[in-house]
Amino acid sequence: MSEIEWEHPAVIKLAGLRTIIDSDLTAANKLFLIDVIEKYLPTETLLDAGAEVMEALAETELLWSERVALKGWEKGRLEGQEVGRLEGRLEGQIDLLLHQLTIKFGRLPDEFVQDIEAIKDTAVLDQLSEQVLTAQTLSDIHLPEGGQ
Image (tube, rainbow, N blue to C red; front, top):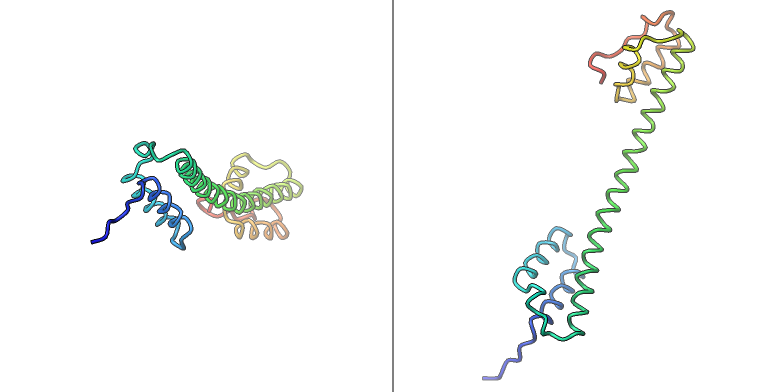
């Protein structure tokens, strides 16, 4: 029977982390496997592995955490931009509608303004803007029930 040479657990951990990080697994699966490795090979118990291995291990762990944070930040930024654009468009439509109504009918009742500002559907705002063109009085503007 041949003698098996066992590598230091820190080297095994480093190889496992690198394999997981470089794999085609989903981020969730990678996180799961990295958590398993961290549970069974915690870095604190591997300090006798040698400076070079420990530095590589720390660098690999840091790179992975930075990648996860960067992906999360990027996703949040992109989603935030889309939400910001939609909110900006909605706000602009409301401002324009209120401006048109004020020019046509004068000072608007506070409750009417609040009802307009509560609308969160751009299609409804489009319909109201069309009503401004033909309305003779403010009562000709038909606000949706519940603010939509």
